[in-house]
Image (cartoon, rainbow, N blue to C red; front, side):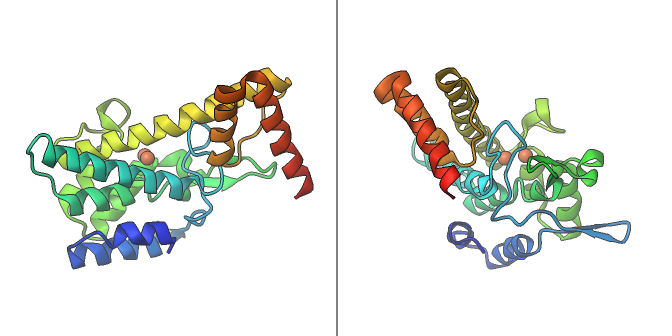
Length: 233
Ligand SMILES: [Fe+2]
Ligand SMILES: [Fe+2]
């Protein structure tokens, strides 16, 4: 298991729940009609096709960031608002919330990411809810996963504090990453005439930072440097 993921999983105190989450992470598959679907490896999968985390390793980054944000929100619920929140459910929900996304992606012949035939028929929420019911996960955890897109982009609004925390953490990280990717693509196009394909969050943050510090010249230099590094690989 990815070390950062393992560290977060180990924060789940309830042993039975932790074991169930570990089993899911080690075997993120679903059987439909006698066919077992296995997706891209979690470590190399993106977490989006284009809008956010759409590069190798994006999935792990998104899961780690979402879980960290969710844990910080738990602290706020407890320390600032004097509310109650079940952290085991929040950690498990944040870790599992997109666990079947890698199952819905494939690398196309031209190297870009695309949707699998399975993903054209069932979305990751439907797949995850079905499999979590089959694997006997608690209802309140299945609700977190089912509600993580909110009621506008998903089947149901969060109805528990734990589901709300995970939903907010998910959109916060998707926005944070997505906005920086979008800005990096835009800046590279404006500065060099050609949009750079972003293959890591580090590159995107570097391009945006160079604009802040050195202006358009900085962007040009950074984009050229990234292109040069890729040519030498
Ligand atoms: Fe999702
Ligand atoms: Fe997500």
